Length: 55
Image 1 (cartoon, rainbow, N blue to C red):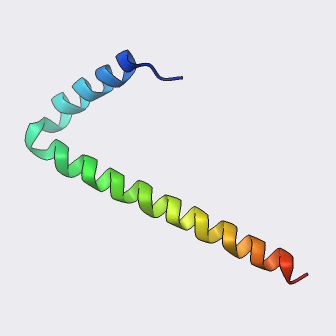
Image 2: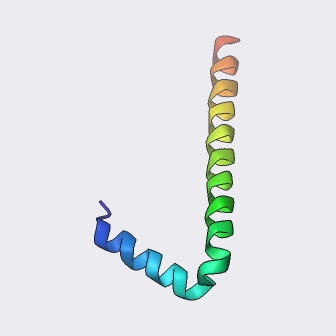
């Protein structure tokens, strides 16, 4: 499990690498990517359930 210390270290490193101006855009894009991934997984599970019912 990841503790708050590890999250803080990763946040500081990201801030140093990308700078404070670009970091909000980067986080927003990561959030959108995660939402799209979850949506794709949900669609995939629904398609798998539909194919099992048709057997």
